[in-house]
Image (cartoon, helix red, strand yellow):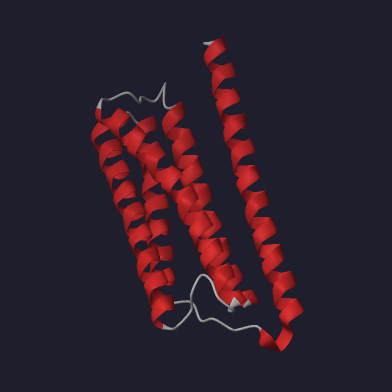
Length: 187
């Protein structure tokens, strides 16, 4: 049992290191955004976030909530509800990604492109694409733990993999909320 605790602690520390790295990436990107906005002054193009980005915020929040429920049900050894909660987590994660695509489409329809002379739009795309790429990694983790849960691999005594995947998923939800608030308040 002591070896499992050491392994779990190592896994948790690796996840924390990875999340810290992601935080530093986005801290750098948002800092560069602020510096670029200051340098351009009145030439900075104010971009109104498409409604799909707000809808995607709801999607990832619901997804994160059901991830929380999956952990709760695992602690109770309620295998059926673990599976259902993870399925909902995964579905809302995919809905988040679809909303992102629609959000980018709305930007294109407004003439806001990834490349070109619109620095504000370029930053918006880079921030949202970077988040989506990390979300793909999170979705892969959610898919893996969902398959494992369907085989009843997680119990109240053994659910470290599930806990780590959901912790990363919560992190991605909080990161997205930060990005939306940043883009609304700083832009």
